[in-house]
Amino acid sequence: LELAIDTLLEVHKTIPDARLTVVGAPVKPEDFIYQEKLRASIVERGLASHIDMLGGKDSAGVLETLQSSDIFLHTSQTNSADKTIVEAMAVGLYVISSSPVYVKDIPASCAQPPEAKAYATEIIRFMQLSREERQTITKALRQSAIERHSLARLITLIMTTLREGT
Image (cartoon, rainbow, N blue to C red; front, side, top):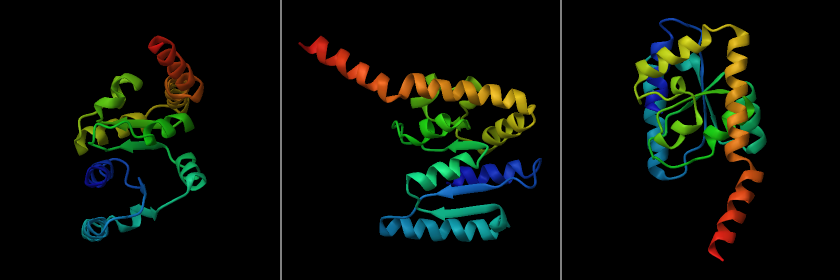
């Protein structure tokens, strides 16, 4: 989350009304401590009015939040295939990620090093495109999510694996 907050600081130099929405709730005791440190950092940096920390959401709430957004920052450094980036692509959001897991699923411009300046530069570049250009890109991302991560494709992969094992 520090990367997302640092990115917002960089973006504000060009787009002062940019906002960041964070969805998720702490679970473990150390998560609550981390959340409080983040909140203090946000206030210290003067970003409190530009960051919405929504807490946990059910799937309908997550969908609503994604649908009201322009860009999805995937800042996970776990190298695991979490579903959040696929959900964002399926909704038609532009995604920016530093995860090597998704490099094959996103355009090269979406794959950025985990650095605030790199993320911010790509956000600004994307937001300066015409509405039509942005829609063309996000439609392609949605199509990629459908083709590579749909339930139908998963069933086909499972069936192929089962057939090869017999």
